[in-house]
Image (cartoon, rainbow, N blue to C red; front, side):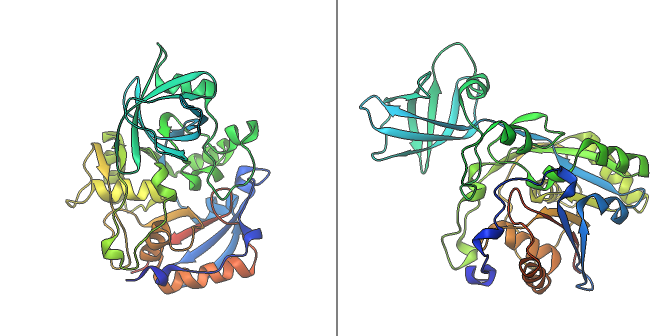
Amino acid sequence: MRLDDFDYHLPAELIAQAPAAERSASRLLHLDGVTGELRDRRFAEVIELLRPGDLLVLNDTRVIKARLTGRKATGGRIEVLIERVLDQHHAQAQVRASHAPQAGSVLLLNDAVEAQVVDRHGDLYRLRFAGDADVFTLLDRHGSVPLPPYIAHTPDAGDEARYQTVYAKAPGAVAAPTAGLHFDAALLDALRARGVGAAYVTLHVGAGTFQPVRVQDLAAHQMHGEWYNLPQATVDALRATRAAGGRVVAVGTTSLRALETAAAGGEPVAGDAETKLFVLPGYRFRIVDRLITNFHLPKSTLLMLVSAFGGIDNIRRAYQHAIALRYRFFSYGDAMLIDRAP
């Protein structure tokens, strides 16, 4: 397939710059991947679209304050976006500067944090942070919320709360698993009372999720790697759900990619691993029956994934429908519930 197969025109005013006033008040477009039928709902109505015995699989990663600004020792301005925390004092990062910093150079970040460039591999630098505090602590004190590039405003306290799921637990993501942003505690409680199960994976979303695909021939595209953990309790819940005839509902493309990677051999395997799974139309899904997801950027790997899941023609029609009805797009936007296409 070609990159241009996944292009569409989106009016700029439909890119959501702020979340809905209430998490579950966003809109929900329900796509039946079998029939192609579309229905317009409110997200809180997802409770009517799930049944007892279904299992929600949610990504409990927590977004860290991964963006820092500062200067090199020579005075040049820089911007650092942490891609992955490696250990107590080391992290991989993207560094934007007029001249690339060299190994051994020192960066002064947010007038408070010193980091030395250890080395560079491709677009990523390995940095060593000085001082006794660990990287997570330094970022929490001095960093800012790494809002996506299409959100124009400077992050504030509202973003610290809303660019985070209510069940976020494990710090390490530099972008939110945005499908989960629509769930509030009351909705989760109501789903639990209805008999809908919940299980968790952890996948730390990397900055590479916003990197554009730069090749027309998609067979030549290389996915960025992301670390995930699938607990044994979630594997057990998946098996029990299947045995009882329930449906597995992935909340977000990150949950889906973790589950499908873990089941590459046929059955899901618990543990830590790296996923570079690139899902295109023609992919045979092993685990996930339904997907809750936001609307994705043109020519993005996530749009390719949902096209594989819901059917490429169905997704094209759904996106045309959403644009015509002025749904809100991307991270702070509205959501879809997609029933898997044959």
